[in-house]
Image 1 (cartoon, rainbow, N blue to C red):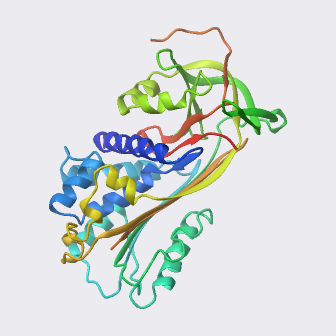
Image 2 (cartoon, rainbow, N blue to C red):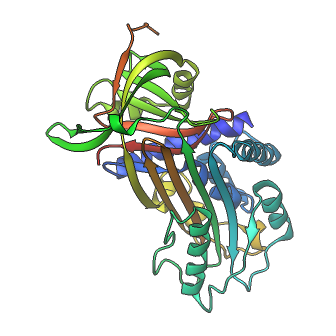
Image 3 (cartoon, rainbow, N blue to C red):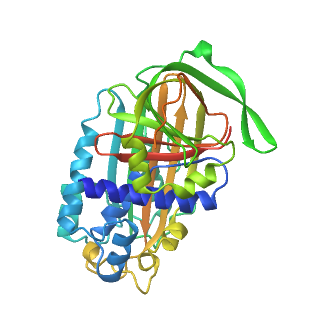
Length: 375
């Protein structure tokens, strides 16, 4: 599964770079959720449509059975992390009721993605179908993701919606004390400052400092130590852009592999925001052209016919971080139609824009990835 996990990291960082150019300010999404929905679609793709998807997903050097079994191993490792934290993951296919889906496609979805299937009447009642999918996503994310598919986004031509939802709620291994949270300045840009609720803790954390990048890295573990939040803070106030551009899969892997124990004085703001994306344009820009093109798309392995095309990839994500821990949810619907030891304690003051991720440590899977630029 290591190769599949590495591919997912490549995809996560590639998507982050595209989204961060498009979006100003805060950013939060689940690369795990998005790539899972796309990998389910990949099962039914053929020819150039498939080649482009493999390329964008970073999987072109792997054969199909390695991809599917690697993904299934990651899924099982993630599932086994439950108990200490809440981590719910669900996949579902919503085909138009008149379509006959290929048996081989359905059995692979069930075997490798543990996907449920619910036929809907898109043709006769598109809005009721949209509401059914939204109700499913809301239920799977404990009510955090509402209206995954906005009003008017589903019409009678929709033939298949592939949906994936992930919901995470974890308590910190070491909680922040609420009485130490104070209102502090957060420097958004050169001349823009806002007040935030800044949490504070002094203790040992796993830490890294990259002098060449000017970057502090802190791992904040959740109970059970299987999942962690990792914060990437530029030492210069407004240098996040430089770090975003320099962060490759190898660089990220090196930073995380090189963490050491260090006493830190950590200041981290409370965060809460949600975001939604229509990812079609971004995925096309990354090289997935044919899947969205009515003349070129080939998903014959899904329904045996050539008239299936992806019309939308909708993603919605939610994050809340406080003294107790964090809560995050995301749902995706693919609609088809040198280390120097500084003297302790080290100050890590997140009072200016930073990048953060939530990952499963054993498989190195990035479940969520984001940027905090201010309240």
